[in-house]
Image 1: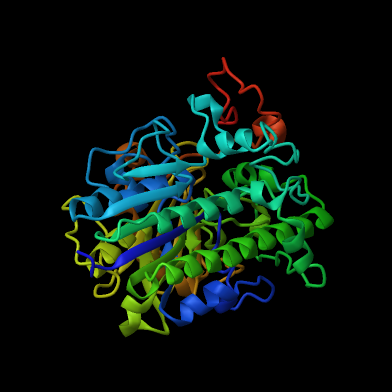
Image 2: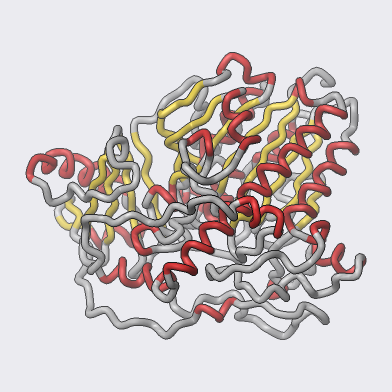
Length: 485
């Protein structure tokens, strides 16, 4: 057992695949991840098949599609399906399995197969749990102060972090994982999972990392040649509608700074593995649950299938991955594929419930994605160089040649020369639809349902704002409810 490969899996929240130096981004600084990519294999076409936190994490931790695990919305009180999880599969093979950070499962203290979890859940008191980060804050003189920066978890205003570095969530998670690594049982291999809550807003980078971008030219959203008049796009775009150009530039700068802080923190994890004589036997995986459009296409956050939201980084690296060193793969992948790929690398049996493939030895022809069941519902099919995005509301289609147009600035759906490609993708996508989606199909063809006149919703930007967390707020049952649904 002592010769089995260890695994360090690093997950982030809201990190688009494009925000890596090794991916050619002109501004963001990720020297650690760039080196890890050179030392392993990077998948450029990995997708979150339901690009919002909870469903994406279900897929990652079970290897199952949204259709199979049952969540394509954001069901924050749905337990994990009764299957062998990523962590449990390792434990069944004799591994120790430890997690630090954001699990985003229900109940919150469910370990989903891990031996132990140091939990950090972004201050979600409405589920009845004070997490381990908040406990640490209280024990170290920062009781209830983690959100006194006044920036919200779902908006894009920014300011530097207001407490010492040791109290920053990224610093806390890194420190706790270093402790976990040092406490490893030397007679058993380990599966370590660290889940950072950033670069997800609030946009509160450490001053040192904000300053790193002081002389950088922050890239700004580019223009699209397709209209934004669809009701669903106007609904989705409301979160991004109230920011000035200055605020957008600051938001992107702060977002990049939060990415860079995580990148530097990973160096400390690698150093701890090396000094614990574990590095040469450890597979390192870096990924995100979904991305963030960051004002591209007039949108922010996730819940869409544009590249910024749905295309996520996936790097598999370390000495045990030496045969694939330096490879950049454009084969199609999704979060469901991470579990079988990593388990297979470690010689651990893959549970029968897993639907993903081993990316090192198998290939996919296409990826289907689904998010939502209301007016914001979106379905996606990526096949070859093309991506079809379908909005049932208004029966709207968009077709992009992602290889030639990675920014998705040119919609090809209305061009006669792409009619055959469009019909083929439509027919294929229709074959994936299930449940209430079947009401949107007529005679085997995508039909959707009529749009209604767009009525702007009240501005609820401050609705998810958090405040002083002492004493812990109680007596609330709908704090996390999105009243725009």
